[in-house]
Length: 239
Length: 389
Image (cartoon, rainbow over all chains, first blue to last red; front, side):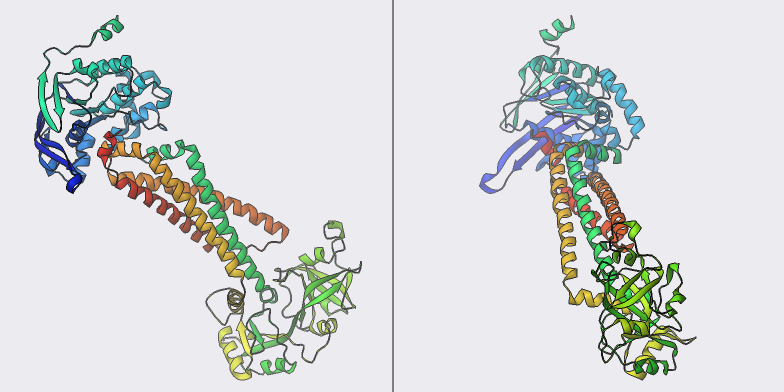
């Protein structure tokens, strides 16, 4: 699980100093989808970066599956990210000169898996997200929704215990956003995996097990949803 | 990771071609200009190489092979009298005018050698016999002369042949042989004749001897013999080796004289420096732009757990790849230029192995500089930035 305790983070110096995270405490559990929501500039992405190990905090502690991030060296943190975290970015960040399968295999290559094995595993997970037949294509040949499905496959291909998503539906229209989130819920949810999603797209809130609301650098509310379910549109689409 | 780096590089076709083109031009400018410079410098030593004597004894103020301060004929005997000398022969070397059958004139490099020994004669005869120089009014010409002294140089059927005649300062010269020779710095062809006949072909003056060529006795090196000649006669004695670090070598002394006393190195050097600057400017600018364009993707790789070292290696692999391809194409183009130069006998072209090696190192340094700029930019990029769309 992810355990964030009394985390503080500021940017800038002197009078320009901005206190972004203020005594933030939060837990994310395996088997659940946690959404971090709140207005722009409230510190969601900063907290997500800190949990992902891409940003050092000024105070407090972050423990991710038994790893205390604040005690780890830069190299150890880099290795930790490669094995423990799956990333889904707002703009997908697929490399346009690589094929879909090659993009998906990147986390495996980073771990030192051979290119051949990485390709096999990439194709297997592409099948799960419904893009198995398009593994040879370049990302720019795919729609926005399909590109985000490739990004989901890339985030899961190395089976990380923590998947973090930064505004995964921001670059998608409503229909594609919901389709992608439903697919994501099916393939990413696992009893030994935690998922944290930063979003201010209220249409995808029903997919969350818990919703943590942030405001001005603080967690102001954590709400549990008893029975997360897909919105109407998905059911209609499925039928 | 190498495959990933190369796919990212080759996928951006425009920048890849721009990088290769920049390094191609840099390589071509550096190698071609340096080789033409070396070829030109080699031409300055053509007389030394064509005559091929082990030791050249010249007037004491002579600094290079194309400078002639005439000596007295008795200087031959003075050199012969040195105990370190096995043989010593007179040599005439000077520029003369040839009158062709159609009345036009051409400039030639006339070499007069000892008639008895024929020491200093061409080393490789293509047609005829060198011994025929002992016949009256005879000359041996080089390949270039067969074209240059023709009334129609572009017509191969009108090339000068063995048996043809022309005039040197109104004195008849009959061709008895054709030889292979290095081209002279002045561009004129070489004509060999005997020393006595060379004096007939030349307007007379009080002193006519250009130099004395000599060889050391057995068991003595040319350097030792040259030193002994200088000590005994007060004349200057140069040895004949290839260009190197021996200041008593006539080739070396000649090349350095041209380097120090003419603007030739500055002219060629400027072009080489321009080639370097073009390479640096295009490679660094384009590669940096390539890194900036891919910063979002490279940042994502960094966030996903790729170390700075591996990302740096990717950039180095990309830079080295374009460096090797650009260098290869540049060297190929230079080879094409060289083939043209050899076929046309000009411009001078000589590419010792050091030129491509140094050019390769320079091009790779340019690429490393370009990669370093990218690495610095990438190392400053915080992986958390990837979340800020």
